[in-house]
Length: 459
Image (cartoon, rainbow, N blue to C red):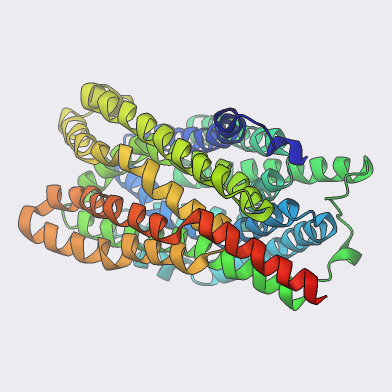
């Protein structure tokens, strides 16, 4: 499997790893848009607002899976670079069973706090019922939502890149079909959208476990599903969690910042929340593709670090950032020109279409900046430098964003709130390259190699 990472042409390797991950993120985005589109057919601003308000909760559920999925992905990639295949197999087994247990706990806790959770995320009397309907079925599906997301990262780390992407497409394809059935035919509204989402993730989970079972039967030494192999050591748990928690906190903090944002937008009414929800989901195209590129390349960075290839590590980072910036720039131009056309796909009232198009034009300027910020975050995660990735996340979603929403809302009202993300990411575009250069990738690899030699001599 390591041949995937050992290609001579770095750009070609980035494409092989990045494109499937980007397609997986694109499939996820299409399902999100399908939810919004089919709910928009109800022509109810309250139902559209409810779906928008529930997105942070769905992201938080996924983030719990990321504690294990992203942590294990980083650890496995470095272990494979060091030739430790048996340890990689144990890590994958640990990931599978830990996520399953966590999913059951989230299901129980979520159903217990259903209505209070709806109020916390910004529901009002107009959309409370719709919000609770959505949350209920999302919590019921939590174990499968978490397993699907965690195994996506894990499969990618052990070289099952195609399978990782196919699972996402299968789950989202099922979700879209069920969206149409539950919302258009059975008129289930937001409850139908959430039920379709949970069933889609269930199908993806079944597919992933089937792929792992096939690999185990074929003799893949990186895969073992037996419960008897679930024997995590303190060192394994520590290594996974140290990387996984900061990775999960990225999503949690993003969700918290979205909740704050939704509450401020909610001051201006359900129409404003609905318009922002549509604009934000359209703007998720460059966001998710950037995340896909950075996550797809992360195992490559970890492999180069584990193998002590400092120059290739730097070249992979440089090329990936350039590709990410070009991709983001293309979306900025596209959204500036066709903002009204995109808004009219989901909305019917002229006032809402104009407002959504204006929001999209304000949001889209941050797209090229994502190529730098997301790659630097993935770089630190891939190398096991959790503190650095966490520092960027805290800056992005807490230190800069929350005060930014408050200040810009005071200065420019609703448009100021919408502009906050662009201002924050403009600042981070200056900070992230500085942090990356200070880390000196070549020196890190040299230091790791010298420490390894010392340990080898001592033993």
